[in-house]
Length: 205
Image (tube, rainbow, N blue to C red; front, side, top):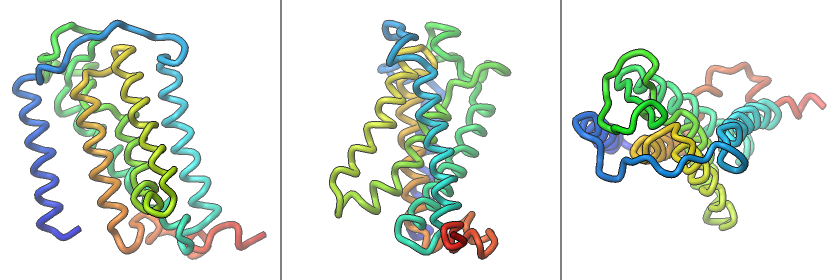
């Protein structure tokens, strides 16, 4: 990704954030609340946490010299950057959650209002994107990974954790960081790791 493309992507995402801050899009509304079973917040947390633990474990074991290992470290870069941006945005925009108000236009409400964007949805999207980009062409079943961020986003809307535009922005953010990480020649975080991490712990066994 060249600098012009990066600037364009950042500009588009920033414009979306500012536009949303001015007024919520018409699609934002409370849905029928579901908080148990398949719609439990614990399910979306489990998906996000499992992917985080999984990517770290795979990265340490596989290293970054194989195709799979490099892609995994790209996912680590993507989720790290996505996590920083999403968390920072929460403190900037302080949007109230559907569980706090039925008005989606409640922005800049201060401490405790961290609806925009969704950290979990951003994280899940950011992790699966590099794998989809790398393996989707050769193994079409890889595209099924896209169901994870879709499902996670649906859960957060159903249990009133986020508005619809929170989730849309999170998909966009995770996709952008995933694409950015995938296009890097060398994974960023891996580049500052010891050589033993680069080759993977598997070489020690």
